[in-house]
Image (cartoon, rainbow, N blue to C red; front, side, top):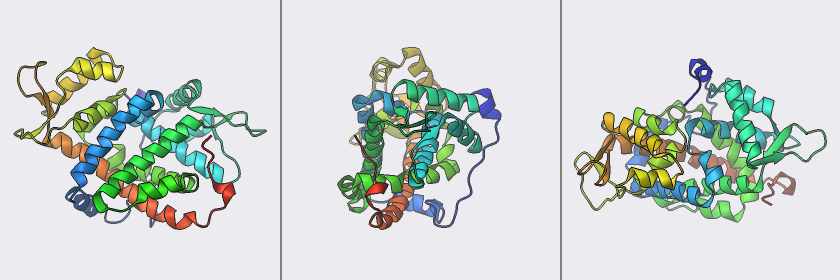
Length: 320
């Protein structure tokens, strides 16, 4: 959960500039996207992809499964690629602390702890350039996970409208990543609904691996079974959820109970011995959050694709 300094801090949301992703017709765009043919399938693709990312790379994927860490990641990503475009990569501990406060995400101490954690676990590495001893750059593993996170969202968009964004990105990730990453991060940080989603979503999103718990429930929706008021999932054990995401059973049970208390989750039969269902409201919060991200990705990719042809080799990212 956010610390006291974070909760008391004034949230500073950057003003959207003209042309920034999500700055025009956002509400209408989300509504149209959510009723589009293929949207539900795209949401399922995202949820399943997030779960699979945990299996393949649990340490870096965990950074995307907690709202505060995820937002701090967006701050670091935008800062890194802007530094890269102006002559030298590198993000300092001081940068993260300052930007966390500027965006109203976390206290300086929380941001410093985040910086120390990603450095400790090798998700970032000290910058090699002379004179940059206090700065870090993403490790190759982190670049790979970040690129895959973008591919997953682009593939979800393609599932809806039949475009080929994911294929285009995979054909030239070194050129597109430096362009798309800061635009997407800016869009996510500037969107108040992305930063502070609905109450059911928040129950999970602000706790360790809570995002993954939501992802697993949505990925397990059985659309062949009609469940009054919601969707039946294939999850019938809280212990399974806890083991799968390396959480304590008490922690997982507490989150499920909180969501159950406000009608977001329930048991289809005997408690603890039947399948869980999630309410329409819970699913709508989750799907809306994905829709907001997808619109930001759509607009960012359109802008980045047009600029990619103007880049030279020095602007590319090295993945190894």
